[in-house]
Length: 444
Image (cartoon, rainbow, N blue to C red; front, side, top):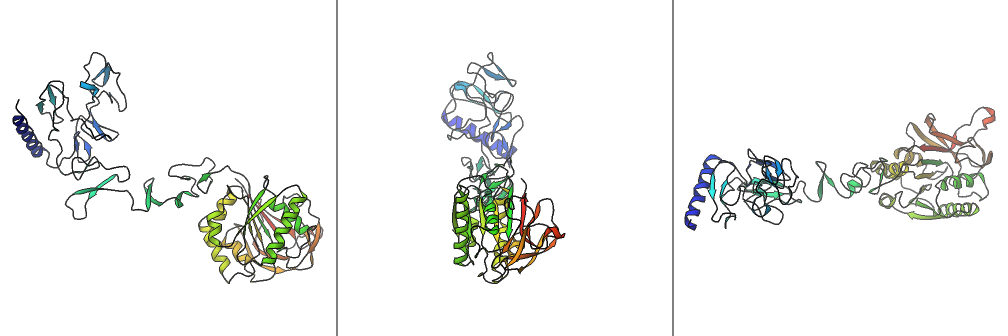
């Protein structure tokens, strides 16, 4: 058969298909983005499950080299297509090659029931048949027959001028698609237990810290109404401090300390007490200062630290503490750390701006219990109300509240997870008074 005669036959076939399917697009029997009758979609390709040796009967079932596919069953008595080619509906593969959408060699049947003869029996045509018609609006033929939308731009949408179609991403950069939503990576994957570190990775513990799933452990919130600036190493206040910092069963204990608004002298004294008490117990502590709120947001992770220490910030600007705490709460900075087993220690004092209670409330450290303020009780006796609590163990039953010791004003009641460990009234007289030290346990 002459080349010109073949060309005329293909042109005639194209006109016939254009008349019968004016809105159809796609090799492989694709019509409006779906496979034509008799073809099934297997991984983005339209194939004939009744005869495709690579998808025989069901997608992914590959016949042995000496078998063909007949009526959806691999059978050695069924002739195999020349070269082992599958009878796919013409979807282009990753190497850029594609099958024609009909049997090659001899008489091949088109998806719509038409026929054509190949020039040499057992071989494919030298040229691609006319088989892709506009509109080119599917990801497998976007804008023209040859363009297949890549993974990074999987959608086929009209161009701005409406004259053609183009491949576009699911989300506009820098947003990325995750489970049908556009999110900002990697920020969206930092504390999301359903998408931890990457889209779709769920944490069995339901806890995600800095993009990593971590095991569930008890966390702790400790509020000390004492800045410890004048405390001695051998004192009840120092023992409470050491009990709190050394809760984690690791060595060394790594502490991230927020110091913006704290006096340098107070910070130095607290650090000295922590290191001295740790040495007494054969332990060691490393302390890293965070001098900005963003330094805490960016670095507080259970993978790097076990304790988050907030000093008494009596030099902070008015309203700064509540604003900072609100930001941390909205980003789950402290919440996710404590739920992962971290220890959060907040120091307060009876002087300065007196806004540490606003920080505690804005950070939601004591759900169900509100701190209404603090009262200075310098040089007053305070009492250990919970000697069996981890913060009160081995702390003397009563000791002197040194400079800037205070009590928390509270509204609400204690519960099974929240304890007043130190108070300003002798429990032997029937009441512990107002709390000086509050401990909340975060259950996993």
